[in-house]
Length: 494
Picture 1 (cartoon, rainbow, N blue to C red):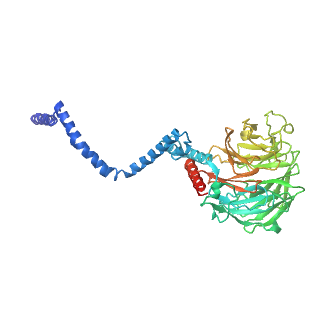
Picture 2 (spheres, helix red, strand yellow; picture 1 turned 30 degrees about the vertical axis):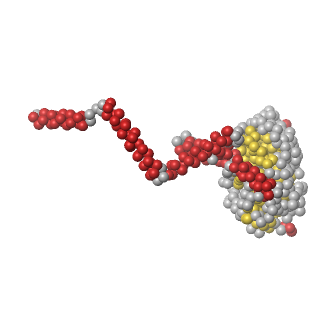
Picture 3 (tube, helix red, strand yellow; picture 1 turned 180 degrees about the vertical axis):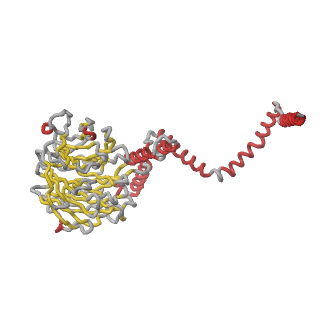
């Protein structure tokens, strides 16, 4: 017990000594300390920071804030001048997206979709790429293969077939096809020229209406023509290896993108039947009966190899299960009336464009009534969504047209719709909202295709041109100022 008391006394003594080492500062001491700091330390400390830290250890942080300050200054200046501030905000446009991902608010899947959507929203006429003018008349169709996503085929009314390598961009040694000063004065302009074309003796006799790659092998493709035939081609030699004969002009044809149990080509012609041609046997497999007028629009489901949609001059859209004797599953009704198959219509004009969405739950249709419809067809429910896409579309001709829709796995779907007023109409598909018009063609646009993985579009039309569209990356305000400065210099020289 004596040792414990002695230990407790020592602990109390140590505590007293500790307290005595930290005496309470009186007012006079604090004022003196402040005075010393004001007169001596602060100036020395700031000098050290200026000379060492900011230029050395924190140089990266300083550069980062200088960049932000420059953007803020540009933003303030733009507001004062009442000019467009969007290009300035675009310099930091992805910060908000990345921040939401970093704090866990968004999943990686949503991050990708928002990022892709922003890229597609910024699509406009490509300023650095030109597709060489090769066709001598309207171009009806384009096709990009999905194996390597780099080879594109084009066909037109001149019966020519051209093959392009989209990655083979060559220096421009000739005058541009476009009457566009931004393109003509661009020293960085690259040209994509055809790799090869079909020989004259192998070509169709008349206009080619559509071209399709074989889904699982880019060594083969097919063409349909007004000369009453479909030809099967070897890509390596650009030679036809087989042809199917018909009783009249063939308006359209289509492959199933996922078929494993069949190699059927669906065809639409002057006949009211959908004729299925079998590549394995080299003959017509069977006929789908139901339409009353020529079949123009065709598309296969991307998730069901047996499900086919067709649009006709009788104003109807029919869905087919090609395995069944009575193949017609239903006929879509624009009013959702529930009437019998033979008493309903999908449009008030020829249905000349059909496109399944990537999950097959919906299908898009375009008709000569200048209307766009989106249909729910999943889960046994076949109904018009009744979305109002407005009166912007002009679709006067009964020839097939090819709209493009972004993949649902990439972003909220966007529709790129060809129009007879020379524009491509860009819609938010689920909101039926027109976002913008892509202007570049001089006559009706016939086809739009998306290059998967690149956020690039390619379009063709009656002006014999193929145009590339890509996301804009830059500052439009600065480009405008540079262009005005160049014009002023040229005026001074004159």
